[in-house]
Image (cartoon, rainbow, N blue to C red; front, side, top):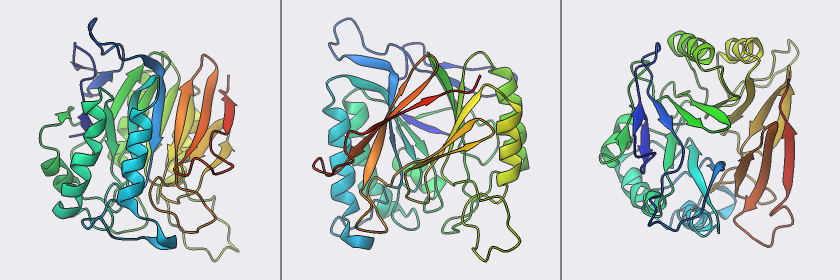
Length: 309
């Protein structure tokens, strides 16, 4: 069952759609006595935290994921205006999603709901779903729209967020949505066409096959099937992913394909660890690059994207 930490609304879940999917309502969650200022259109997007069991563990390029993830959590909490929620786009754990890794991850990520900022978790190829559930046993869970898949829909005032599960098996670099999940997605999109749709999964779309390419695909095995769904539903405005640790924006038939930076693990020292502050507008989205190193020249840079009509 999809895991969501922190109160979503006083009404809780709105269940009972034709897809047997629980839609989580993201709206005003603070009581009258709560002075926390919240932007209902703003979301913190993190990815690839790779939290290890040992907090002294260093990853590639000398990064310490424990310190970097802790810093990212602090940055989100310290915002003058809190986001409506934080979404972590997979690879929460360092390698295999062991109980020891999630034992380290759980209290760190729980700092956000303690500060009244809900958390929504997507699994990646370094995660283990059941171990994650066990570590966060007190978290809220939604209905299971596809058995064995960690997926859900978040409904915010200006967009519906479809959180998918591309984990085929732990430690496999490639991902797979599968026929049943894709069928659910197409049906759910048709049922929730009242506002822009943003789709998120850990794995990236593989490049359109090139007969001369010798590069081994590392993303979604069923990339083309997902592309077809993105193109067919005009209210789908963006696909957001992690996995390749690169912040980049591409286009596919009018859909923005957004790769998130790694929050706590970088492959090269020249690539900064970061997260994205996303603000939804009425006709698009603004992405603000938030570096772990505040002195980095890329820190605070914004990109404005306009939705296709």
